[in-house]
Amino acid sequence: QVQLVESGGGLVQAGGSLRLSCGASGNIRSINAMGWYRQAPGKLRELVADITSGGMSNYADSVKGRFTISRDNLKNTVYLQMNSLKPEDTAVYYCNAEAGAIITYNYWGQGTQVTVSS
Image (cartoon, rainbow, N blue to C red; front, side, top):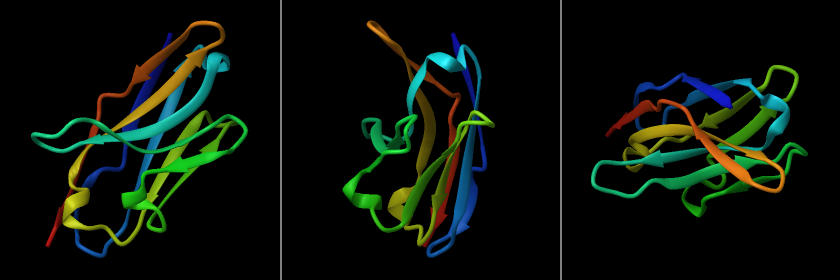
C-alpha cells in the first residue's frame, strides 16, 4: 500500500504561480512512476504530468512550457511547479503513484483545489 498526501493548492490570479507537493509513504520501494492528474467540473480526469523513478518526465500538451514536474526520491516527494497559470487550469489536482512489478496498482491522493481567476 502507498499513501499520498498533497498540499499547495489555492487561489491565484491568471499569470501567477503555484507549487504542488505530494508526499508518499508506505511501500515506497514499489513505486515506479508518480504524476499529477486534474479534473475540472464536468470533465474527465486527465494527465497533467508524470515522472519515472529515473527522472523521465512527460507532460500534457496544454501545460508544456508552463509546468514542471520534479521528484525527490530521498524525500519520497513529487512536485508540480505551475507557472503562467490560466483560468482553464482550474481543477482539482490529484497526485498519482504507480506501484508494483508484474502487477501494477494505481494509488491516489485526496486531491487539492487549484483555482485561477481571470
